[in-house]
Image (cartoon, rainbow, N blue to C red; front, side, top):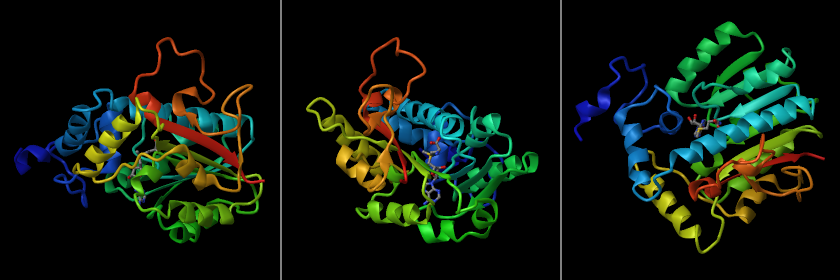
Length: 283
Ligand code: SAM
């Protein structure tokens, strides 16, 4: 593939390198969006050689986000959301879901992708309770001390910190320390939401998780770690985990099985068994 083939669409925003895949654009491509280039779609094509249903990782993740935000806004009465790694706008975004429950809910989105930031500015124009910050979510101090974050979120009142589809792009081993810094700043009664590429540690699926990880990490996107239940739960250490459904034990659950809207009409495929989520509360 030549570089010129990567250059569509024709109008490339300032600061975007269309010769390198971006996490946000690959995710947008998986969800069937339009804000992506061939280099981004190439990542999905590469992973699809071993996992043809790779786009389902994105859908399971996104549908989990929708239900988790609805749960927090409706059941837990959370009025402030710090959405780390917000991604490109899609059908149902955090502010739309939460502000449908209470229009005064404050939402601060954080991302560092130039295309996401451009779209974020557009959202700001139409909504006074939604704010956008350009920062590195893997530098908690930068996010937590950001002027816009401090101006619009009240850290004496419970809030929800979303890390949905983000931490698997942090490939170093000290992710739990990073999350500890975020959690330390949250007031009691706050929630943390995580969705993460998952290695279920079964004979059937561990091999698939390792293959997808290898393909993502060696693709033009460069990241995508599949962690085990123990490794993901380390990110919410010290928090009280919410049961993922009626009568269920409070622990990590496959995204599709976390408070589903109804019974799945077909069994989960192998890829859908490789993404899991958790919602936890700071006691
Ligand atoms: N949270 C959204 C969701 O679940 O639908 C989007 C998830 S998308 C897979 C991950 C997002 O995290 C992308 O928009 C990407 O730009 C952003 N991201 C990745 N690393 C980041 C970093 N170090 N700082 C800020 N944003 C980052």
